Length: 509
Image (cartoon, rainbow, N blue to C red; front, side, top):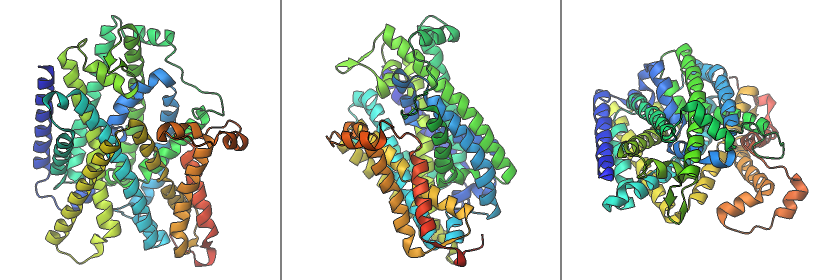
């Protein structure tokens, strides 16, 4: 009965999204799809981007990790907040000054068309791998806790979810997802708040009492002061700042919505409001994680052969018999609401980047109907690729590997950091033949350094014995690379570009 109610709620939620999409996509054209006719309301963009900045994985992983890491994730969140200031007051003015539709057009203007295609290629690779890995993890949760009760096969549930996302983004693009993301962010935040209240109530206490319980269970540690650990606070703050600069400010999906706002000033207000709300929302996720672990310690919920833990803790508790079916419905709708903004935005931005940066559709003398047909074919192709990637992850069927894939997708953002910083901070012209080698060198060397710094992590994820412990201790002396990985990556690419550049042939910006 409970799972039946949840399924009805899911169907109703999808119908609502499709209705919103139908209404907002009327009279939409390519300009609407790519940048919302540059007329988006900055408050709606700010609120909707909260859902895009988080994801279904964040929704279950941040609370699930509190049992192991306490509140140390908040160090990274503080770094994110600093990064949004850089995006708002360094990158956004540049994008508005050049009146960009694709942010990688800056690389084309500054370093040549090949640099633009390279930047777009790394974005397409990173966003495709990262978005589909996150999609797989969430669909897997729904498959285990909801769809399996109705004997709905995984392939069908994944295909239907992607089809629905395709349908509501197909016509309106950014113009539509500005509205749907606002709806989905509302669903996610309401779900977060209601779940927190329900678990606190189940502990027969209030928020202050729940905090005291979490402290007594040593779940509220915030700062890590050991410089050798990946969680060292300075690594987390600096790493978080550059993660935001790269994965928000240099990411077409995130910036596509920002530059759809009419004026730079409003776009900056959007960015700062969003960053402030995100700090509070992440704090609530951590508090929820603490009370979930306190509840699990008092009233263990079993899953499979053991007690639910990690990414499975939140869904297992929310959908357990200990709570009413209403909480299960709230959790599933909130989980979907957290998932969809990251997937629909990825699908739309990948279509935009491929059409503009690879096909160069805006520079071609095409009528609107031809342009629209090409755009829709690209959109359909990326949706198909998403589905195939989800099936691939299902075949791998290993959450540990998927988390590594997400980490690798983050590593591939390094060349974007190197390219943009080189283009902004210097006036040198890179010899075109060396652009690809420089951009490949960064991720390869970074991955190698990370492997040598923490071989145990890769042995665990890949289930292989690498035998690198002695080399690691000799080279790094116990130092573990953390979120600063993306900074190292960008510096390597920047240095390589500097070596293969020529001051005398500098381009004017």
